[in-house]
Length: 635
View 1 (cartoon, helix red, strand yellow):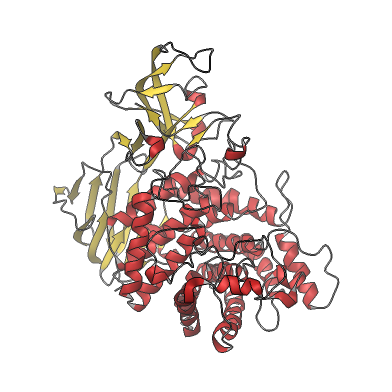
View 2 (view 1 turned 120 degrees about the horizontal axis):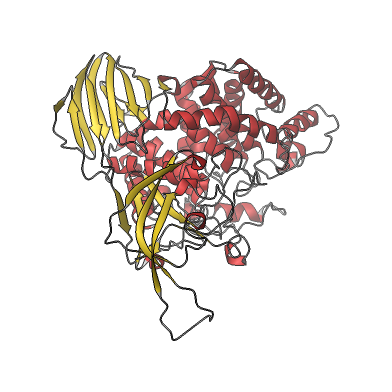
């Protein structure tokens, strides 16, 4: 079933371009800054205590005083795991002995906090050792283990060092013994370990990892999906008071092969779907893959924002129902869009279809990048499509939609998630088959494919629309995704025009050493119109150029965007680049401003004043102080 697979992190070497700049930002700013946060050394950020938690857990295992004990969320350990995962990816591209030394030291601290039986979790080791594995609904033990498994694989692939890999193999054996050998019932409250076990299996060949991942996926939702209720009835304590009977929130309302709609907590959902898609391709499980197709369609056809954001409500950080996509109260968690990229990448392994690449691109260039300030030091957890200072972040209904990025937050899952996703971009951009190189996303750099083809990509995407592929060595087939947004595309091979007939969104070109494939994509900025079923967008339009969705900020439009109206009969012009926005290109379009009235309501029709409107890429919003922002405007 598997038609192609992701390349490994070391097969891609970025060259100067948009992705390279971001990966250098991760290496030079984000990774050091986030490590200081984990060590409680970053001024102005919320307390993390992550590293100290591991030190205290090791003391607890030795029977010593645990100092100030445990601090943070029940899943606090995972912040260190995602940081290490990002470091592993970064070191593969940008070797750095000092950073590697720092990471090795942290791995030593983590390893010392592992119990003799392989258990690893600071919350339960410090606070409630006798409560291990008794609250899978809320305890996040498997979630944290999963993130450390991913970190172990990343660090091993990036450096060749296997200390953390051995720690996590021992942890996986502990989990296997508990759930498989001893037959304890249960599955993760927050899916994550399933996809991580599959990564660990591919890195080590350890069959127990594959078996355990398959087990957790297969038993989810069995017997009416009442496991969490029965688990709750056996204990007299809780972490958050989660509703154990809400099978939709935790994707356990039915066995996974019977699920059709994306429901519940959006991050949990796409992490689970990623693992399902991965397992389906690994085991040729067509029934499981068909469930993934249904769930993908549910998300992308009816429950996804134009920015690639998912999860429309802050109540449960969740999906709601079809076409319920409010702009000003959108949740659209940054982590959820990272997870959507993971899901898309795994679907591409079994179903080579450009639609998956299109969504992966949409999520990355809009919501994932918007989750981090341009300087790499502030982060959004939530990504609304409309912000009104004085309401957003203040009104009870809009509390979660902040008008400015915080430096850090108590639940700090998103900042390291952005870091690891950007650092690993090459693995999402390129895939390989037996003799075919797959180019899913446009990323400048060189790629060494396992079958002997060596490729160089040159592009200024997403602001430049030409992409040049040069075959430096070997021969084979290039399969390049042509985005659905590129209505007018041309391609030449060694200067001669070639056919652009696509198969499921990809062109296929046979190449050998010295060949040059040039592709020119559609660079027009265009109006986008929403289905009338999405009520808030009725009578409105958005603007998109290439992969980038644009928005209107008050700072560019007289301080007020709520009164703006687009004239969609006029062409959109590409304007200047803004250095304060990292060289982003702005767009200008004709429109009008509705004159303000003194009364809340009036019988007088307000005057329309002609104006020129300025739009900036959505991922750049909120970098110039607190101001209004809108993606959709009336036309």
